[in-house]
Amino acid sequence: MTRLHFLVTAALALLLFQNPANAQKRYYKGNTHTHSLWSDGNDFPEMIVDYYHKNGYDFIALSDHDILAEGEKWMALDAIRKRQKGLGRGAVEKCEARFGKDWVKRETRNEMEGVILKTLEEFRGQFEEPGKFLIVKAEEISGRSKSGPVHINAINLESKIPSIKSKEMPTVDVMRQTLQAVAEQEKKIGRPVMTHLNHPNFQWAITAEDLAAVAEERFFEVYNGHPGINHLGSEEKERPGDQEIWDIANTIRIAEMQAEPLFGVATDDSHTYHGGDVSPGRGWVMVAADKLDGDSLVLAMRAGDFYASTGVTLKAIHYVPESKVVEIEIEPDGDAEFTSQLIGTKKGYDAAAEDGKTGIGEIFATAKGSVVRFEIPKDAYYARVTVTSSKAHPNPSYRGQKTQAWTQPVGWR
Ligand SMILES: [Zn+2]
Ligand SMILES: [Zn+2]
Image 1 (cartoon, protein in one colour):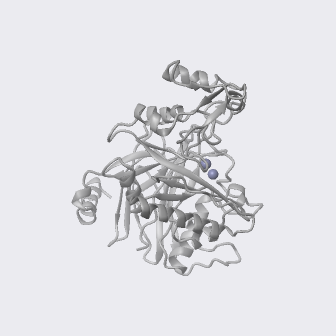
Image 2 (image 1 turned 60 degrees about the vertical axis):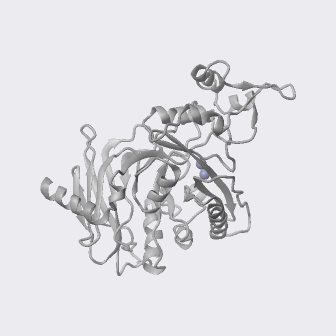
Image 3 (image 1 turned 90 degrees about the horizontal axis):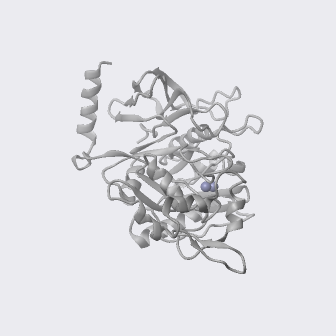
């Protein structure tokens, strides 16, 4: 395909399928999953926001377990020190070095030295700037079913949503009831609250079938930077990895339930900022929105106008529904070579195939280079593109990790 052909098709796609009001869209980089001292992270929230602010992010969602950064939280210095795993400078000292000696509120309680954590309202003014940097209110609603942890991030919410912790309840019920509570709050506050189901393979709690069944959930983590979440699955346990889970769940949804597919996000799920496995900067989303505010970001993501990344940047993604053509332009990255795969499921797939060749999540086509064009097979239920770079991830969460990007499924409407 010539460059001119690409531009003409791209312009046509823009002309036909984009509302002129959206002409000002640009990509905003953000991480929607982060922990601080407010729950089980090992740094002050303002230090964490400072990291993302300095490192080219446009937005960050602090998503502590079952808590929002509001009200009063006192913490013993000893408890903070324990989370540093004995390495590096102290969290308090680092925070004072960054924000000044008087910034950290020290208070001794019951003869224990401690500090009072800053609330979101107290520190957001240090960083936020219209159109440039945004902190989105979020919570990791950290429930539990009879199968294990059921963690759902709620982004752009207003007040805390209690988690459901049960040793008897099936996973799908915990998911449904949690999402119901989010939907109720959304109605009450009159703005969109997005949810993503986190790390399905963490403690092997959530199956692709669970994710398919709860069709009201529209997002899940196709990548999470925490090293303990079994991203690649397990052959021994016969459990698929996160990418395979995505295809199984979406095949069931589209082919058998006539439901909308899941979109995939990549996140850091960062807990550790000094000492141990330092994890911010591993995975993020790039959201094509017309404005940098919580509502615009959530609505753009619901429309599928975003991609997930662990280091590969896409300059443009174009999809023309009439011809079922997907075109992707990848930002060059030194001498990195890119391999793009068109992945999906065709009619006639066989989930029970004895040879394991189910046809679910089949690689339809592979292309090299920084501009790729794929035609989705006519009999495909959907297709999506994974771009894998030859470059190793600079801070991998699993052995052999390369940087990647994942586009959202198309061709299913
Ligand atoms: Zn979690
Ligand atoms: Zn988390």
